[in-house]
Image (cartoon, rainbow, N blue to C red):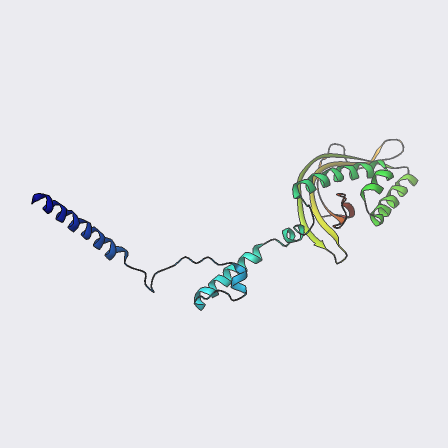
Length: 216
């Protein structure tokens, strides 16, 4: 008899536990909060049936996310096989080569690295220096920073990337006798250059030509 009493007592305990769980957790009702996974595309296309006060908030958040996306990154993503780190390494090398070639009047190297219009400008300056018996010396101490500031792709598939270089340099201009007529060999200049590089995105070549330079 006591055995049956133990079984009955156990059933009562189990039943009480389930009752407490039921009263605490309850059953699914209209007031329950549900996790709903949606995409921005579904939201934009009106495929999500949610209360207006919720969809309005979601639209605001979606808009904020889109505005925060970098326009530069969007453009760079359209360039086949573009790698930002590789690009920055390449243009850093080009920066050094162009500075040295311009100072040494190395037309062959400049012609290889620059666009036609920019090369002609460089050549005019170099020719004037030759006529005046002047020569330049540039010592690139270090490149402090390289920043991609702008990027765009024209309708013909030509991409332009504007890069800011912050560098430390020593620049001298000497006469035929080797005397310094401009600059100071003990003065390190901090210079900001804005250079624009160009490439046809449909071309398999990885060469970006320098097409514009200016000081900031």
